[in-house]
Length: 318
Ligand code: DGY
Image (cartoon, rainbow, N blue to C red; front, side, top):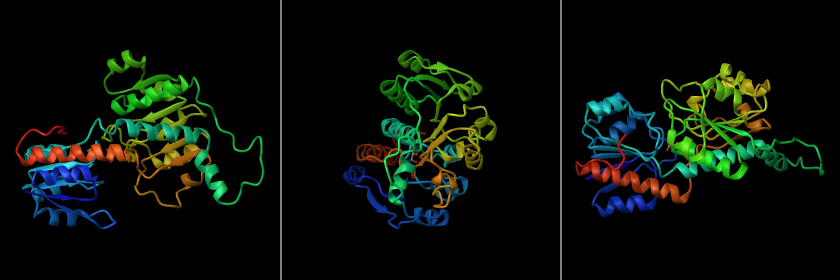
């Protein structure tokens, strides 16, 4: 059996595949493989490990309907036409659970960095602008006892909430499609409407999937309902906030700050106005990028592919 990996995954996952006599070919160029290249390449393979934002859409799936399994090296599957895959009987695996802690760490890191303008001040030193000790330079805001609003209380949202309670005794409110009564019991999170989430959050952190319902959910109208000293954090998908509206909301001080691990489009261009704002921190989609988590993701994607090639149920099927 032969698998094509459209990027690089941790050694432990490659080893698992090899131990199961699966031959591996990796995409090694520094750019993302194009849609046409992916279709052409996959003709010679039995399985695909999709690394990065490859479009696993109807065109790809129909052109590659011979694939026995597709393993996503991600928990997110907004790039996949799941209904079409189901129709064609191609199982799609993903990697939930193993990346919750690392992704929540990234949200927490962004929250703290934004609250103290850390990325902006770091750049100031690099530019040679640290002249003197000043008692009231660009001041931050404190997080202790503030209200965290979680949009999407799943595994990652819950981890973020726990960190905020542990570190800053924050009150947690959340908004979801369905109530998460376990989170309510476990950490005392309070379910609120979307409007209440906007109005009451000091920090609003996004942990939901990108779907037609959540696309552009955080637009100017939403930002206008938030507190003027609120911090917006998104480590989920860039399409969930409207970037033009976010820039306007920050420029016009409708909200105080923003921390993004995901942007729209990705990669973000170096001249994006967000990158020079004081209370903004941006990271290049590194939510789950720790050695431990990437290794766990590689193991899970390998297990999904091995199971799919054997015609067995995947450990984690979308
Ligand atoms: C995920 O797992 O969905 C990460 O965002 C990587 O794409």
